[in-house]
Amino acid sequence: MAILRKIMAPFRSLSARLLILTLLFVMLAEVLIFVPSIAFFRLNYLVKKTEFAHLATLSLLASPDNMVSEELREELLFRVGARSVVLHGANSRLLILRENIPHGIDAEFNLADQNPLLLIEHAFMSLMVGPGRIIRIISPIANEPNSSLEVVIDEAPLIEAMYAYAWNIFWLSLIISTLTAILVYLTLHWLMVRPMRRLSESMIAFRRAPENPSTALVPSRRRDEIGVAERELEIMQTRLRTALKQKQHLVALGTAVTKISHDLRNILSTSQIVSDSLADVKDPKVQKVVPRLMTSIDRAIDLCTQTLKYGRADEQEPRKERFLLEPLVNEVKTSVGLRENNGIVWQNKIPAGMMLNADRDQFYRILLNLCRNAVQAMEGQGTIDIHALRAGSRILIRICDTGPGLHAKAREHLFEPFSGSARAGGTGLGLSIARELIVAHGGEITLERSDGSGTVFCIEIPD
Picture 1 (cartoon, one colour):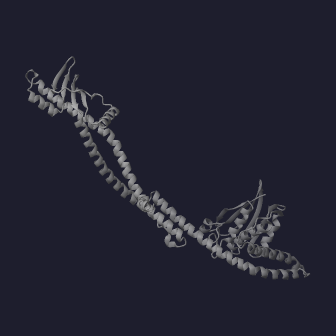
Picture 2 (tube, rainbow, N blue to C red):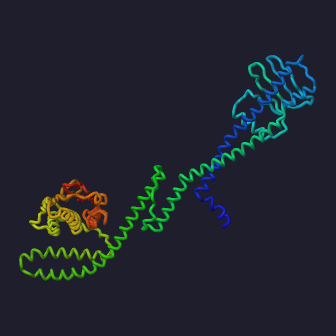
Picture 3 (cartoon, helix red, strand yellow):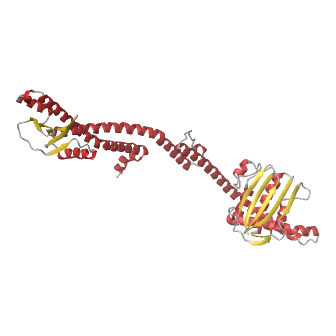
């Protein structure tokens, strides 16, 4: 088996298979050509025999009393290659030449019948029966519609000539098929096999070291399917390499966040104790601020606990409840740090009494991320407008700002971490987190507009 594998190894390549198949197909085409050609070769052979016999007949008819010597008769029969020649007229039958030895007829063929299938059948019948038959040939005479010529010949010379012709065709076909196969092989090897080998080598190199930029395929300038495949492979490798770097970045970030969350939870626990002490202070201003402070600290501790519990940035399933949306938006205003006279106008246009069925803490994080991005984009001057409406079984919430809008790269990689940031130094995690939480609620977020007049995000949540 090992020896057989070594022998068959060269034929497993695309180049070797292509060469063998080209040889086989050309030989098959030559066989299909050979079948009718051998039939017409036989027909031409018999036609020439009758033409020679006709010439001998004309020479005899021109002699006195149609009589010739015995030597001349044998010479004519030898030259014609016939046993007898008979001329048929409208109402006559004239024996022109005949040898002295009597003979029997094994088969008869009429050359007036030019049916290709019948000619092929007669040709292969002659090859299968073999030499030894004596055949009669009946041929019409040109320009004499009422006359015909009957020639009796031995079939052995005809079969010998047919075999010689077949061998010539075989060797010629072999030479043609070999040359054609070599030319086709070289052409296809240059146009297809080499580029495909280049593609496969690039795939293998990329699989072994996807993070190495040197393994990237440099596409050629071809405009055919191979060129398209090269360009698409190069794009795929670039995107996969970028995604791999992002995943590695996320893994490193997740590890760092886990460590930070562990220490931050301890710090926040201390802050929680201090806030509990502040709750006993009777000052009205302190009593007004403490509930918000305690809520923020509780949210931060809960977020750190979830990160430590799962060891990654996956969000837990939403714990849905019905709550008023307008007060939540007011909480977000306080969390983003807006004051009365800071240059940014906050417009809460949520209808009074509108209820939302969602996880309140997660929806707070969604609005906080979007509104913080809007505040940072406007750089201390502009308007943030938040309004909502009920559309059938869904609620649409729009966050509008009058900032400069997102640049092209941010729009192209929107909601992708580390790629969709709208400002220098940003990570793009805010939009990514917001989208993840909205999708977990069965909703979606879309960028409706972003130009020089501002940006509008639309959140669609099932009611």
